[in-house]
Image (cartoon, rainbow, N blue to C red; front, side, top):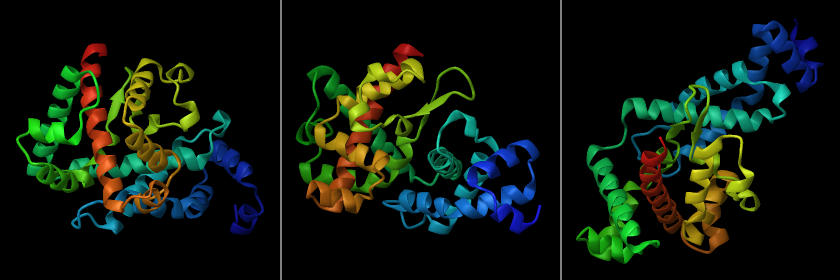
Length: 262
């Protein structure tokens, strides 16, 4: 099929043709059409990452996700390809980052210690622990705690995309994929992924309001940290801290809950 003939097809017709024929020319056309999406996702992931993580590398990892999305997309499921592809592209990038183990061991260890402190405190207090309480539990001054949170902020994006398997290899849920529109953050309305997704959303609902808002604006409204700062009238570094603390609390809650339901 020539480029001219392909150019005359609607997007819906291209998808139908590709599903029927698996024609490489149609696949290449789709890749070309959606290539900017890879750069967009890579750009979002790059925010807050350490300098040793190159943007071009993230784009390269994301391309594999785009190919995967094109191969597995089913137009009959009435999901927009862009929505489906973003998840696949982001997943491919994070899979590769995990495989190269880019997070320094000391940062990973400190992140784990804070999660454990948050879990311990919130279990005993029965409420959200304040920064001062977490710092005190860890034997830090508030200033030291703030510096530590900034240091580990680049790793929190990755940890939010950790996958929970619901029993089937093709049925998995990441925390990020469970962040819905604020009006649909009701566990009773989320049924497609069952108990795991409901548990994640319940945990999100229990976060302090500002932290929950940061997650929704970043993952659902697709705003950058700088844009979120303008919305909340705080600095970009403060948004980064709020994001990191939200992830810490979520992971602390979910690790405990996961043990009880798996």
